[in-house]
Every structure is written in C-alpha cells, then in structure tokens.
Image (tube, rainbow, N blue to C red; front, side):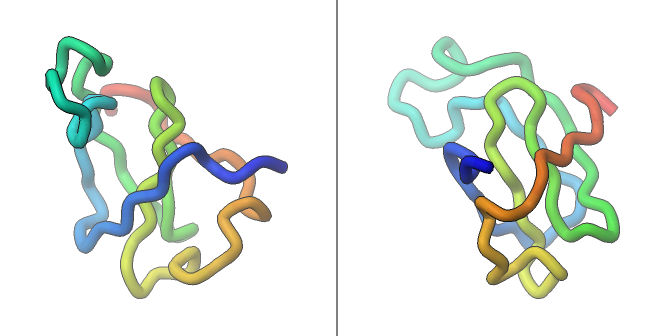
Length: 77
C-alpha cells in the first residue's frame, strides 16, 4: 500500500474538502467542495484528491497511514 498523498489531522468528524485549501490560486486548481464524514475508523479519504482526514485522538491518529486501506464515504454525502 502507498500512503495517502496528504494527511490532515482534524478535530471534527465532518470535514469539507475542495482539493485546494492550501494551494495558492484557490479552488480554481482544486475540485468541487465535498463534505466527508469520519466514522469509527477515525479517518476518511476524499474521493477526488485522496487527501486523508484523520480525527485527532481517534483510532487512526498516530497509525502508519501507509498500512491503512483507502476509506472514502462518497463525495457529497
């Protein structure tokens, strides 16, 4: 398995991703904004850009991200 291209640690179980939050130039370089829900695994992957969101203090926090399978909840849920 490969690690996700980018991992973001978050404090909320519901997160938004537009693929360009930290990119100069903004949303024009990203993807449509989607809302993702972190479940009991403690992480979720964006279906567009593969960014992984890990809940701080959750079961995936501190884990080797390359060992965790892809886990998306579907774009726009």
